[in-house]
Length: 528
Image (tube, rainbow, N blue to C red; front, side, top):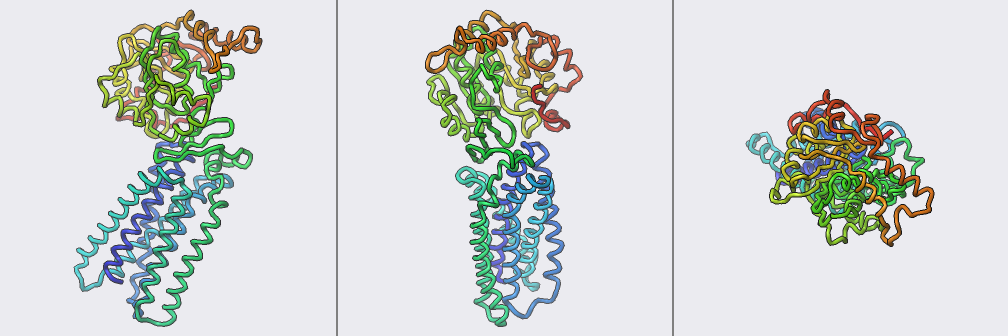
């Protein structure tokens, strides 16, 4: 095998391996709801498989070199083809396991695919480097080619293809590229003198790769059909309706149910609704800002999501500008397609920035706000520390104007609540949202009532029309919110800062270093 061909195959092997690993991690992350341990376990399975494949590859290369010069190319072609097929089947296999068995078995699929991928580079190194040559130098160059291919796979697949193609199309492209490469390597054997049997095997191998590519592309529907439903609902997927839409970007996957429920990255991320009368979104937490701040002119919203909270904030009296920072641009077309939240994208007071919330705040020290609202994600998901740590809350505090208020969703994490009481002198819990400020906080019942009675639909109709018994009952429930102060410590109500501080005194402060909310053994706790 020529050294140039060996370099090419080493680079291709790295490209395919890292590209598929990115797809695997995305699928596993979605299946787990982006738990922080997901990447480590996928990587561990990948490295175990690579190591075992490299170990077993010795059996293919320790025998005396075959007298037929074409045979080594067939060995490499077979390794490339088999590893590509195995890597391609990991994601759809994970989906089927999630529905009919257990998704954790998917790690074995990763080990198996990585095992075959691990065979390629050692075999190529052995067949492409002659014993009489500078083995160390040549081996180094093969590693360089493999690393360049791996880096190219990470960059191209992770940052480019993931933004323009869905998972199934990227998988198809990698499958076709891998099988085409296997066929080309097999065809190289036809250019060399050798036994007719081996030459026929080379032609058959190339033809077989083409047939396999055709068959797997034709079976794409059954393999990948309802993939995201299977990964999200697991064994209940058969009784669930198909997602109405799925938005995929390099920042994550956002499926939306026919009811408008969004599951960003595999975790519930809100519902496309701004209806206070049937408040599934618990928008009462966003509207409560009107009772905490008399005139919140400038508002910063970290995390746009489905746009429901942003729409609620724009309805508050006194709001002149709203800056919303969202890390996943996939939410923008989703919001545009839903009339209930579409006005957020077209309101002249709203400015939407695609960026990481913490990075944007750090880079704009001149920007200050009357209110900073964060309704981001569950506290125990990967990277949530960036938005819940003491260091970040101190950064937020420095961007508040005098008398400004911060609202952030703790998703019932005692550690997040404890951190807020550590950073801010004054706090107030509203359901599972903590309001924090440098000034004493009081829930103004007069402003609260004026807000609720003044709310209007887009066509001007009141949200709570007089004479509507159901609307009146719901309005009474909302008006009674201030009277729930220091009631039950969990559930639908208010809790004073003093009571909150006492209740979470035993929790730990979240810092950038301890990443308490991510690595503590816990799970998202829904409302009762």
